[in-house]
Image 1 (cartoon, rainbow, N blue to C red):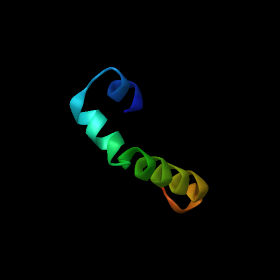
Image 2: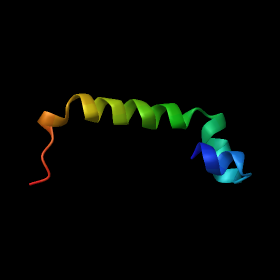
Image 3: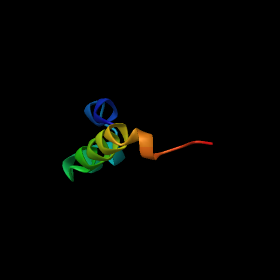
Image 4: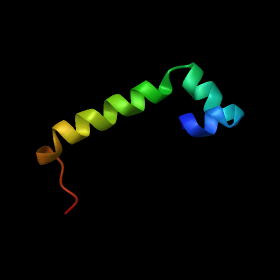
Length: 41
């Protein structure tokens, strides 16, 4: 997302400007920290 934003992609740039990238990173960190609770089977 940040790479695309830096390359001039307006959609990604607006998401980064709105700090959505931080929301996604927080969600990823939560899933990783609690991976035992999630099952793909």
